[in-house]
Length: 279
Image (cartoon, rainbow, N blue to C red):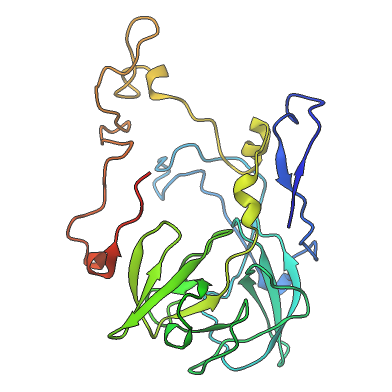
């Protein structure tokens, strides 16, 4: 995949950088693997807004992704690389030898016609797209789509360009260096996929205009200092006033901008060897 820049013939195009979609090989998704997706507008079951700045946007359909990779020891051919509006990564359509089709998150380097496999309890070739237990993956290998609970499906390292590194194995646990820099322990019977997630240039994309962001379903953001006192703790004041509160807070008074919100007694703390890098 590459990126596409524009000549600044209009203000919109001056900084616009988008994907050239050269890696996409199929325009329409597989009909049997598509589900309807209802918009919430950031509202809960009571109709109250619980997530701000959501609404509108282009209609989407959900592509059912196989995060479990539980079709073991059967070859699967890559039929196509497709765009998925619900995630930053591309998805690959696999067809198994028994003609069943499934979507997976597309790793970097996977091409149409490649053969991938998910093993039950054996070591496979270290090729992008092959899935196996952490106990069978060599050290220093880059992996993605990592399980936390065996058999539950991948929950970590799924976004575009991300990859974790297998650092060590000891006492039934694998030591992984996450994309954030955090070093975490994961059970060796959990599964992971070889390679780095594709579409690594996703972080270079610049939308160029507010309209493109609205197409994604994101509404405008208003600064707290521009609001009234009734709307935000930073609001109000005469003229152009800054925040009166010396500590930045959310509209509900909770500290923000660097304030740690993770529970100190969280059960998974014992699996974190080293915290992520501070920004």
